[in-house]
Length: 118
Image 1 (cartoon, rainbow, N blue to C red):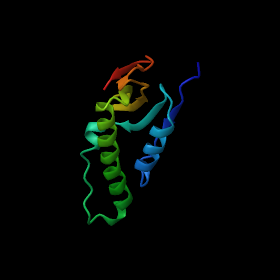
Image 2 (cartoon, rainbow, N blue to C red):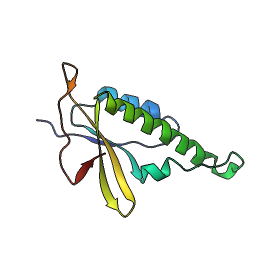
Image 3 (tube, rainbow, N blue to C red):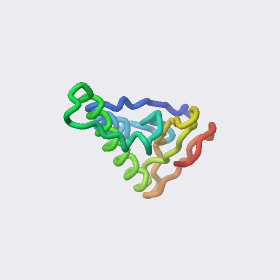
Image 4 (cartoon, rainbow, N blue to C red):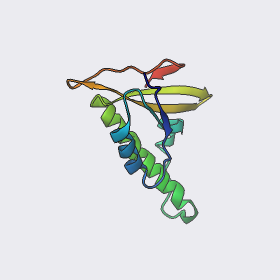
């Protein structure tokens, strides 16, 4: 049996396309690390349009919200299993594990290496 592959998604312009590419080619059990930090807090960060020195940061946080929403929807549809691994106080690694599809039902569980279901 092949070992699952782990990919880290770079949250930047184009990340949604990178996510779709990963989803298309990922085998059952492959893992996508889509964020490191505190997702609930980080999704609420708002950088004003007037702060032109942080335009890239504003775009990246907007992209994070798009990616997190899409991954959550795909997990609800049974394509992914969402887990998180605690890295430290208030810092987590958010993971999406590709599920194998059998007759429309998800059939693979994530390996347990100190992960909790998100």
